[in-house]
Length: 436
Ligand code: PMP
Image 1 (cartoon, rainbow, N blue to C red):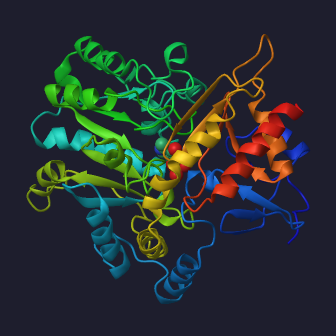
Image 2 (cartoon, rainbow, N blue to C red; image 1 turned 90 degrees about the horizontal axis):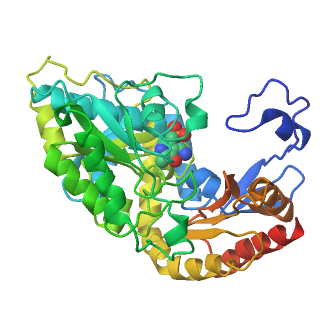
């Protein structure tokens, strides 16, 4: 294992390239809970790759399934051709999905899943003769990938810069982060859920309600700092959507596949959307894949169209790719046979206690957690920027991979994390925060 001779040609996404190239970090192998650097150092992975490696790295069952599939069928277009793994996976996935979700449309990533869901929502209204329903509502401090649709509904100003005007008529709900009332809440915050969700009614009334197609939210906003929905919030969003005939889309790219202790976040949180976007944990990170689970009401409408009247002209070269489908099928078997979703539920209390033990670390301004997700926020102090990025870099050098997202360290370990490893993650953060 060697590091490359030159770092020039590679353009690293979402990262200040020059700074990284002055102080580069590489990994060349991985197994279970650990990455291994080219010089042989073990790095405990506290973010599951990038919220995706839920069963641990290089799981032998998944590796074998990909190897086998690669030798059997490398590629088959999903435009008018079927191959068994994709159909088998669709059946297994919809068995695991919430009741009433019996169809899945495959894509190649989370961004593609989001754009698919937004287009499905518009098509749903169009075939019902409501073609004027084209506007979308997203939320501030949300992330929905990098396509123009996802970017339009997402709420991160810096990422939208240069790309306006994006999708016309898009509005954004306020985010649900309320440090004055909810700082250091354990699990779901108590306050503000109804009021935050009622903002939706205001946004709808400010426009012509009959022009709005859908609302999209992450059930728990992940990569913007683990913003946990306050009690009652998602329930109220559902009610307001129903009142105005809007579809509710959950982007479960992070919360899907056991992260909250159930197959999907919708099940863990007890609120059902109309469309569920998924990716990441679908294949345990091993092969790119995404998908949209479609509930029976939306599917029935679109499927009832006369043959040839293609209302939903959409699909990717890599929709249902054989390697992705085989990896996803093996991943689902691993999740089920190893009981990993239940394991996440069982260890969530230990996780919560461990992350909240950091409350008195100097510089910590908030701690948020749910399931096997957490954020440790280090707000800016006086006129100094947040130390989160520097702390994450020190953690890596000490052997723990953590991500900095804005002012927060975000944590999302594989669901196989042990109690000792939880302690190692937390103690490394404690050390790195004090070492600054
Ligand atoms: N939605 C959410 C909630 C995500 O966290 C991400 C990725 N971090 C995406 C969409 C986009 O997924 P991808 O990077 O696979 O396109």
